[in-house]
Length: 210
Image 1 (cartoon, rainbow, N blue to C red):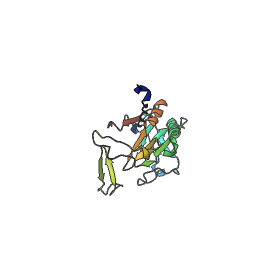
Image 2 (tube, one colour):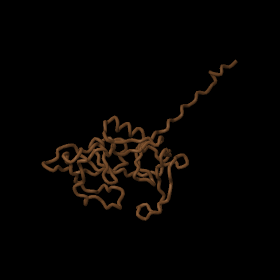
Image 3 (spheres, one colour):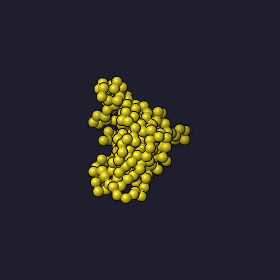
Image 4 (tube, one colour):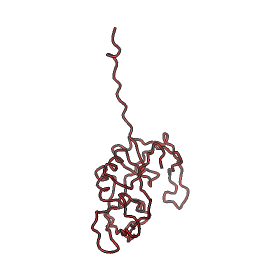
């Protein structure tokens, strides 16, 4: 009698699906930093940051509030530390545009680490709408820049499923139809954690975290 165990074909392990997270910033505490001259930045209608943007003058004043963390909000972009830039460039260099900051102090000269304005310029239409739980609509308010276009909103208990064939080897991207939302994969999150980066918030998109 043939031993069934000897003739059985071993099952191939299922490929583990990547986990994805919304990446954002921590708004707690009064910030002691601001753009000293907004005229160097592109007009509001320009959503992506041009690489040709000149150094952005930033005032740091610890007497007015807390110093910047490793990732802060800067209009529709981010203000990031030099060590954050190093991680981002190592993980996915084609996803970003970086513009150096000209850091200034109320008195004296700045001699600390560099800071940068950072924009995630990769935009992917990667949501599997049939498998996700989110609201999809057509913008009918003319006050919005995406008037007449499709848009996404995240209801309570939302769930996002992404098409990995669209994402490919990318580690971070903006969502088409909701470009304010930046998505990264678990490997990107782990790299930020391993580098000890502070004030960066990650929310698991499969669990509807805020």
